[in-house]
Length: 226
Image 1 (cartoon, one colour):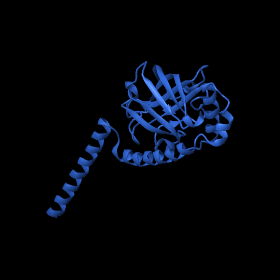
Image 2: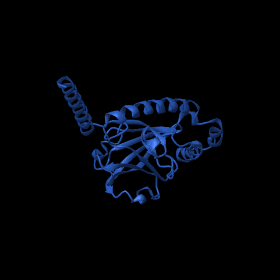
Image 3: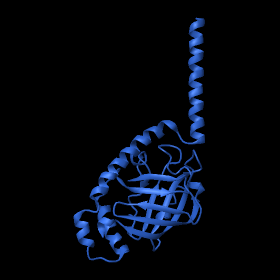
Image 4: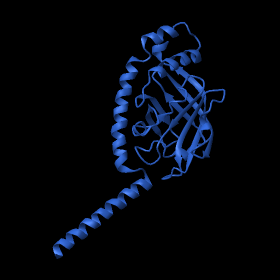
């Protein structure tokens, strides 16, 4: 009986240590188990995106933009055509933001549970970069790689880059806000191209949303589209 008791005690202590370690890692950085799963999904998305980039823009896109000289008009055409082919859960581009914990991640189409496990997700009802309207992207803060964990470190003037298969877009942060989850008007169109980043707030809670608003400042169309 004593031996069984010792074994049980050791097992309980070990389990307690594991739980404390998991909690400690989550508080200090991000939830470790889902993050491991998220790493696998993000790596797979990266591989899929690299394949997409070898074929985009497609020949039909290049034909339509051949005689379009203005980069913004060309980007708008390419964005519209690429958006029409994008499917839920598929990678669509990359986001880079040094001020958000040196963020570099593949963005996927969709904000459902499965899509956000792979990385930041593009709101399907919002525009694609280059279409001249509001683009919405959401990301986790504590689970599945926690790509937007440091969203609250972003300040006005910071830069965000979206590298799409058809062009690269640079945005400058205008402001940040904390809003209720029901305030969906944050992704309304505002008359110019705006990027809206969204994440739960505060950490370990979904009580509010932390929103970053950024305005388009530069477009570089893909060499394939020249």
